[in-house]
Length: 262
Image (cartoon, rainbow, N blue to C red; front, side, top):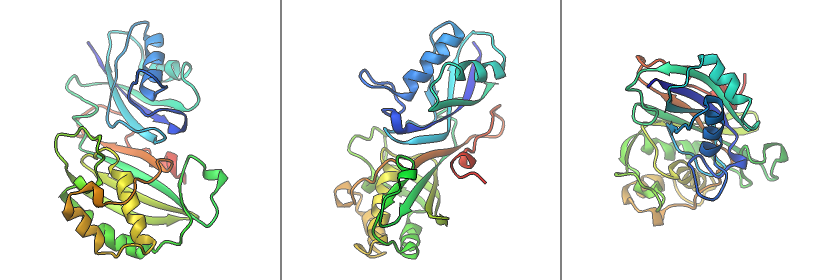
């Protein structure tokens, strides 16, 4: 049975996360309903990374197996005609049978957009986090340096996390500015449940001067979530890119330009 890979983008504000739930609208349920209607048969999807309520995706990758015969562009146009405006299929490819949206992924990239202003911005409501206290970005960058590489990230793992182990490899953690936005970019082989939002909460503690730069390394070494900062809001968090081995037949895998055009 052919395996189809899809690139999907969505505004997570109106959805109860990606994963199907018995009570509540989710991206997965809505996408699968549209796919089933278009394919004229039930469809089950597997995604690269399950996002929480309020978290967005500029590039989520999913795969499905189906014997429905459709052109690749027809999957895009046909399914999008059945989806609400907050979800869109960006591309479709018939891919290799051994491709797996989750387990074949080499890395995931998340972007967090943050407004640092004394007054919240209605223009960015639901699309960016907000911190009204002035932030020391240099201190935040210094604190973030210890997070690069392979570590046990238990101090940034939610109590509901179902991952078998807490060790992850952080390849990139950048803190930059773009206009009025602070842009935090994180790339790792994989992320734990609430890991990015818990990291953001800790970085803001340093940026606000509530904790010293050295506290971040101490927190990482403690491997104890109870010593960490509160989980930061989901509003500004975007699944931005997925990396796969080059031999797989896929479409565009970096959706950063959808978050920050130009």
